[in-house]
Every structure is written in structure tokens, then in C-alpha cells.
Image 1 (cartoon, helix red, strand yellow):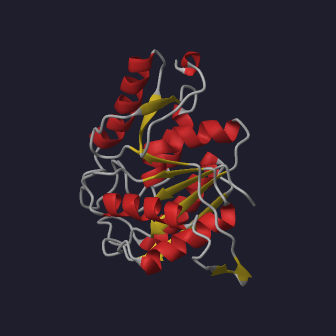
Image 2: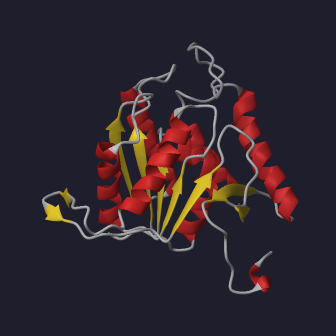
Length: 238
């Protein structure tokens, strides 16, 4: 199966929090979208890897993605080296996405910039035919995504462009709340974390609404780019 978009996240829930609305919108537009999680989030203060496995599967169903895979790298300790790059390359070559969405370039959690660099490097290396990979017994051909974009996470990074997600906010938030172990739950007795407060989930709505306000819509998500964003005509800009 060929994908139009592959969204890569260091942890289960990274993608939902940051670009869930964009994914839901593109799926509604008929695009094939998949998610690749680098780790199972086993170092998280709340829940467990097994719980997050189930939550990520539920979130995937809510968004309607066409595939979700977890590479089970070591949470907190994975590195951007040849071994990790090759595993990501195998997924890129298998699904041949046109666009890759990945972690923020700079963020509070150390895994986010690591995941950002790993995904970006793998996208480039995947296009080199002399790098040989075998996946599920098959020799793979080179494939380089046309575009790599980085979503915005904890820090209020300034986006290079924004996507109008008006009408898809509810799906996004439902996919986030699928991670009941991680986000605000008034009945939970687990320790508080930076993302488990009501303020944290409210801030996701605030950010989307504010970005929407700035472009004259109800809601939006922001991304940064690795090269200049291009349009065919100045009239393509909204």
C-alpha cells in the first residue's frame, strides 16, 4: 500500500496532539495516511507501554489512518544512528509516502528533536539507491519523500505555514483523549505530568483557535519547513 502522508512521532500521541486535525482532514479528502511511532513511550510517568499500545490503536481508529506501526526503539535513549535510520528507511520504502510529517525541530522533550533529526535524515538516505534494505524478505527500491514538514509541539515555535483544520477539531481531540492514561482525567490518582493537566489539553485547543484566528478561520495547525515552501501562483496563498 502506498501512502500519501506518513506521520512520524517519537512517542504514541505526538502525532495526534500536533497534526491530528491535518491528518483527519486529508483522510476525509481521500488521502492515504499512516503513522509511525518510534517508541512505545515506556518511560512515561503515567500508564505503561502496554496501555499506550491499546490507546494508540484506538486513536488510529478514530483518525481513520490506513496503517500504524511502532518500531519500539528505546524511549529516551534511542539515537539517530545507522541502525535506527535503516529501520525508518525500510518503512519509508515500503509505503512510499509523498509527504512526511515529523517531530518539532526544537522542543522540551529530548526525544522530539532526536526524532525530528532521525526522520529527516532517513527521508534523505532512503533516496540513495546504494543503500540496500530488505524488508519482510523483499529487496527494496530507493524512495525519497517529496516534502518533509515538522509539526509544532510543546514550544510555541513560529510556523512557516498553517493548515486550516476547521471542522476537524473534534476528531483531533477525540484521538488525543483516546490516551486516557496520559491526559487530563479528574479521577486519575497517577502523578501529574506537564501534559496531564486540564490546562495542557485546553492549550491545544487554544493554539489551534489562535492559529485559525490569525488566518481568518476557526482552527489551524502549524508546521515548519526544511526548504522554502513554493506555490504555482501567488493566488494560491490564502
